[in-house]
Image (cartoon, rainbow, N blue to C red; front, side, top):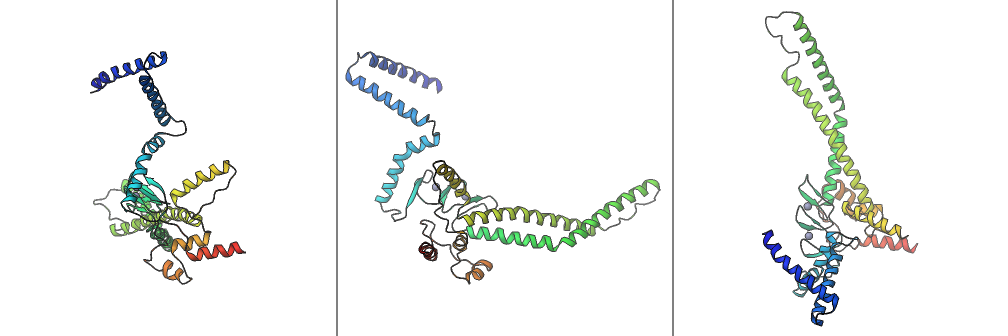
Length: 312
Ligand SMILES: [Zn+2]
Ligand SMILES: [Zn+2]
């Protein structure tokens, strides 16, 4: 196959070189000269796309597919599919479909996810607009449960640990005694099998509980920080990059989805009134999040609050 290709490419290259040579010496007709010029121009364009020092292969693919995106976007609108007033920021290269703000494509789920935070391997699902609150509540209450269990069973753990140490010592003493004396039969064990297993299980459970409390606690704290800032895990990277870029230009970056720490939490948890802290946060609730995940207007009370602050 490679041999056949080189057989075809060889003469083609030779012809082009001849044409270029002719073009240089101006012995060819204007039509040929025009062809040669177009070929050179095309080559420069292609090289600038592929070997641009400011971009990689992604930039080249983006630039090459730009007409396709434009066409698909217009054809979709023409047929009335997905015709709405939602402002889209880009087009997903994988789904070939307009992508609203804060939406990202998940390569594992193979679809676009509204306000995507991350793909959770433990849940085997994406954490996004509609399940972000459930994810955070799960992490938070699970951490509280583990801390409660670890703290509550601290005395039990210490007793079990001491018993295991005692078991080890007794076994050691017994082995020494057996080595010095002669028995006609094996001496009975100091602790029964059930007692040994109970103590070991208690120690294992305490370590498991504490490890989960630490790991999940760290994850919960990290997500709490992100929610307070009004950004997702993905947006944190994007915003960080943008902040640095604007800082270099002497400008300040402002996150448009940050309404202030308390308001961010209220929007995230869906708290509209004071009573909701009990009914929607502490107690299990199936209420939907603010907005549809496509457009990002803040709730009216946030806008009113901001307006009053502005007026002051
Ligand atoms: Zn997509
Ligand atoms: Zn996913």
